[in-house]
Image (tube, rainbow, N blue to C red):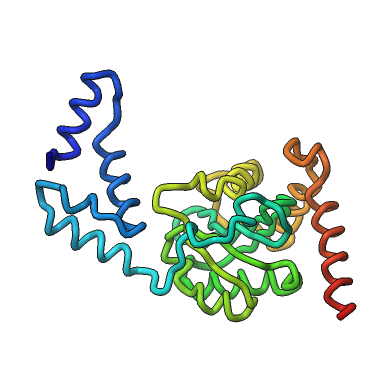
Length: 237
C-alpha cells in the first residue's frame, strides 16, 4: 500500500497494536542491512532515505552478518566465541573495549584513548592474543570503532561477525556485563582518572562473581579450566 511509517503507526495504534514510527524506520533499516527491499515502499523522501541507508551500510567494508554465523555459536555449545563492545566515559576521555566469552561469561576490559578503529583493534588483539587458542569468533555491533575488523580476524586467525542494527539483544551477554561494569565506572566518568591497575581490579571482581546462569560458578574458574584443556589439546598434536 506504500503507506508512510507514520500512517502505519497510527492505524496499528487504532486497532490495538501500538508501535512507533521510529521503530518502523529502524525495522526498515535492519531489513535493508539484511538485503531486503522494504525501504523501496517508503513514500516520502525515498531518495534521501536510500542515500542515507547506503552510506550507513558502506561504512564498514567487508562486514559479515551475524546470520552467517555457524549454529554452534548461537547454541553456546563451545567455548571461544566472543562478543565485543565499547563503554564510553566522559566525552573526550577515551573508552573501554570490552570482550565477553559467550559460554563462560569470562570478561575482559581495556582502556583506549579513543574509539578510533585502529586503537580498538590494537586493544582487542592485545587482550585476546594470550587466549588465541580459544578465539573462534567475535561478534560486534555496527559501530565504526570496529571498522578494522579484518586486521583483528587476521591477527587472531578468527572470524568476525556483525549484529543487526538496533539489535543489542543479539549481544546480550556483553551488554549485561557492561551494565555490571557500570557499577564501578558510572556513566560520565572521566576515564583519565581510572588507572589500568584499577581496570584490572574491576575485571577480576566481575570474573570472580558467581553467576546464576552458570549455576553460581565463577566465570574465571570455568574459563581457566577450559583454556588449560584447550592448550593441552593444542600442544598434544
